[in-house]
Length: 106
Image (cartoon, rainbow, N blue to C red; front, side, top):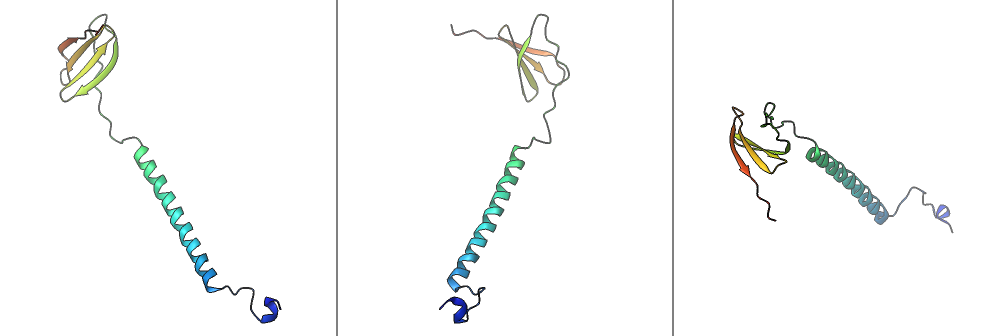
């Protein structure tokens, strides 16, 4: 005898199969929600900051000096030049505070 002859309907599903179907649906929804959260966190973390550190007005280097690096601290900023000097300027006035000569280790 087939299922149709026994009187069971094609839509009838055993309880354990119905439970398995619910588990798969819940797992799918959980995975989709987790993926959306991970993507949202990546977008939030990798987006550029809204506030940027203000750069000083144009820096006037001494004649013959060419900048290769720039850094700043509280109340000062420094420029590293090609001839291995660090020029430290006052961030408020832009005046040269100090010059540090870098000696090579050779």
